[in-house]
Image 1: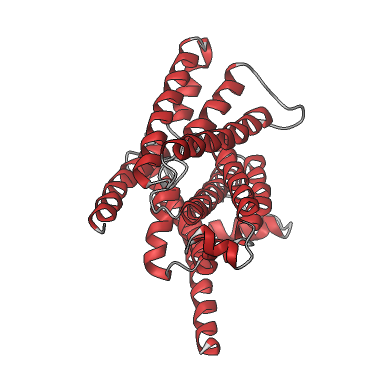
Image 2: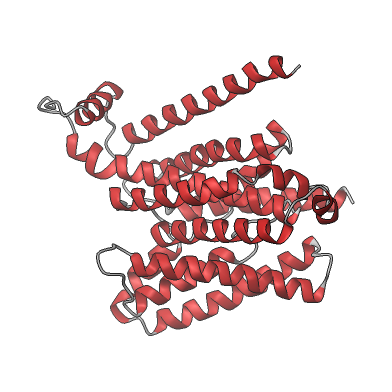
Length: 343
């Protein structure tokens, strides 16, 4: 039976990869100025192999504007959906996600503090914002889960979500206070808080890729432990899982992924909630398949959301965080309703 399932599994992964590449090329081609697919492929191919690019092709638009942006969007989608799937598996909670738990708000607070007070790391663009976002994301998650455990040892869904909402309101109040005294930085901070990857460069994409490779490997290597935790922590300990170590590893990795995404693109909510839940309905609860499928789904979803933000009201641009929040809030209500109804 395993031999029969294996070809289907690899075929499914190949289809997801091809679909992701196709959407990526579509997003590079479309925008305020549409570029033919043949020109896009020629520019990218010739650039990769160091060949001269024919005159008349939109080389600067493709290589300097759209390609780094689309790559950053795809990597953010992968990171957010992967961290969301890991949190849901770790907490055995289908509503767990960086945005619903308040982790994204904590990361935003850290990044805004770094921007407002000019905290930097020499030689690293937005290094201070990235470091502060990752630190505050992790501290926020630890605080929320610790406080929830104090109130309810079972870590019920309602308790975690309620504390996450309260923490989000608290973080936004601090952010508003910082914005009040930010002076000439108000406009950039306000646009950044809505979530946008406009102006992303290859350095941003590289930072996202490095963090994804390091932290994503930790999460993907924990798929067996996440499957064990799905049947309860006591049962996981019985079969030899070091629950504390696994929890700490996944929480740190997820917080780092969310922190880097927030520092690069601002607050982009609900991706980690919507994509893992939809993927789970397609591939099942096995984290060996779920985590990988969520990565592809997150990339496709966020690229399409960014494309919609660029073309719906062109030449005006809708921040990507607004698009994901509109979709995610509706899906959140749907999931919450059916979760309550199933009890």
